[in-house]
Amino acid sequence: EDQVTQSPEALRLQEGESSSLNCSYTVSGLRGLFWYRQDPGKGPEFLFTLYSAGEEKEKERLKATLTKKESFLHITAPKPEDSATYLCAVQGTGGFKTIFGAGTRLFVKA
Amino acid sequence: DADVTQTPRNRITKTGKRIMLECSQTKGHDRMYWYRQDPGLGLRLIYYSFDVKDINKGEISDGYSVSRQAQAKFSLSLESAIPNQTALYFCATSDRTYPETQYFGPGTRLLVL
Image (cartoon, rainbow over all chains, first blue to last red):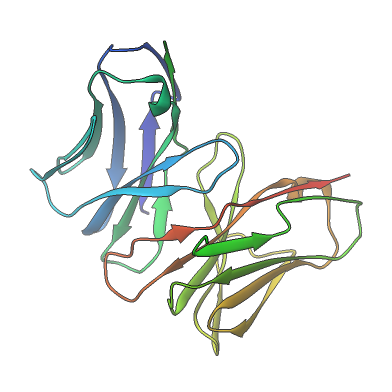
């Protein structure tokens, strides 16, 4: 059964304090691993798709990386506006369904 | 204007009432989904539709029904609401390319008393 586990559940950082969010997954053949950002009271917003181990993608202060078992979302010198919940999701070759993790709530204090 | 819209944004109802949540999209996508989100849990799939004539149950469909009125419209109904259906509900769309990127609406916050 496809599964996604995100850690930590919550992360509190000072502005400028870099860190990483973890997404561990099991899937029967990976079609894609997704990262979404969700702000309070809003729907998830697409950030990245990673397709294979070793791949990296960047957007502003965010960089997503992928191994065969995990993905990391690295946040470099975060700002308060980066505060949000970050969701990881996978889609396997066994079907079309996307499996979502519970998310990591990130708080960045000025 | 938002590509995926949901109405209402907030709803309070009583146990036993029938309610409908509506979703419209302007992305031109064939595929539409209904999810619910609960604290500490990931998004869970309630129903999905690959086109107007194709509707399928997700992992937690009991107590829910859907209607795909057009390519752009997908409604979720709670036939007889119960308190454990209190949650955030999201509609999403995707095109046919794999892996599927999903585009979400703003959500409906539902409280069942």
